[in-house]
Length: 164
Image (cartoon, rainbow, N blue to C red; front, side):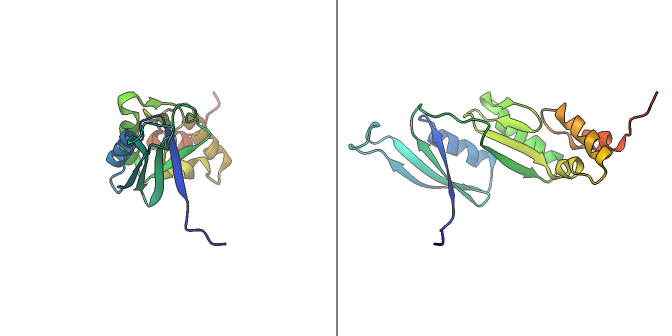
């Protein structure tokens, strides 16, 4: 049976609208869709926001105000494929603002607890280099970083260890 596609549902504790507004300010090609509200028959306060549909980078999402029962974990993250260091710097700054946190190896957690991997395309090329020694040097450099610095990874990959 064919499907109409997938929509990622993000569960929030009363912050769905704020989260959608934040994400749409970070990812400029997004758009907000339908908002649904809890009714008298709902467990939540009638009239309060239940869901907000939105789209970013062609991906459909729904933000759900589901309550405090569930929290985000690093088991699910969104990877942002960045063309260059300027894009990495932009998304890193945006996602860590106002209470977001830097984690490691290109990972950040935004102020809502959602995990993101901010990855320059060249970093993937470096850690998967056909030369295993070069890939190992790039990977070792990456493991020492929070925000990925592709120039530093490239320098590490291109600098063989010397005996001495």
